[in-house]
Length: 223
Ligand SMILES: C[S@@+](CC[C@H](N)C(=O)[O-])C[C@H]1O[C@@H](n2cnc3c(N)ncnc32)[C@H](O)[C@@H]1O
Image 1 (cartoon, rainbow, N blue to C red):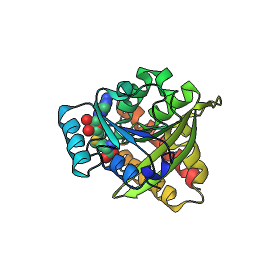
Image 2: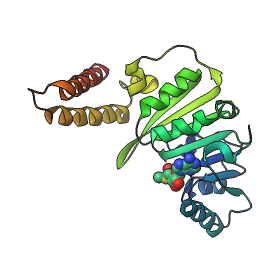
Image 3: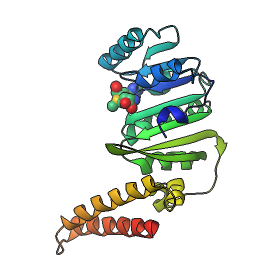
Image 4: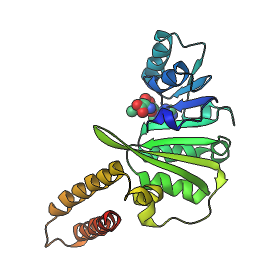
């Protein structure tokens, strides 16, 4: 399921960190969203977004704004906010800069390139409901998180759930792409563990033990 399929249909959306503006152009061109806002921080990507929107003749439907994270949006201005292709810590810092503003949107669609556990941890600590998690294989594996910041979820997730995804873990038995994603992560962990000598001590030993713990978690999920 692509990011576009996760956006609330029929309502405006914002793509923060839009760069080439492909998502926003697709959303309005296909009629999934009546209008969109692109947010970009850097001068280069901001200009790239403006040029792409003009090139596709969509500047009457897409507004391009320059600024840091959610500061380009007013509270509740759009239904869905997308943050994709960024590091997990950047996503956390953008959402955490103004939790009240974050909560004014109906849906967050997040595609962190790393540190997924930290993004889930933020959602869980704020009580925002993780409604859906999907895996897409497009060369690499990408995980999409759909969060409803207006729906409280008070149960605390375990470290295993934060790391591997509470919803993905439930789907592991049924969905082949999720199993493949976990197997890919397991292979990666096995390679890392093999690279740490057996006679390691101190920090190296602690790292090895941590990776072995994570490997065991994945083996149990995949059983
Ligand atoms: C790798 S691109 C991803 C582009 C697109 N979203 C995608 O998924 O293909 C990440 C973009 O996020 C932008 N970015 C990073 N931090 C940002 C912030 N705090 N506010 C707005 N944009 C940001 C960068 O300028 C960059 O263009």
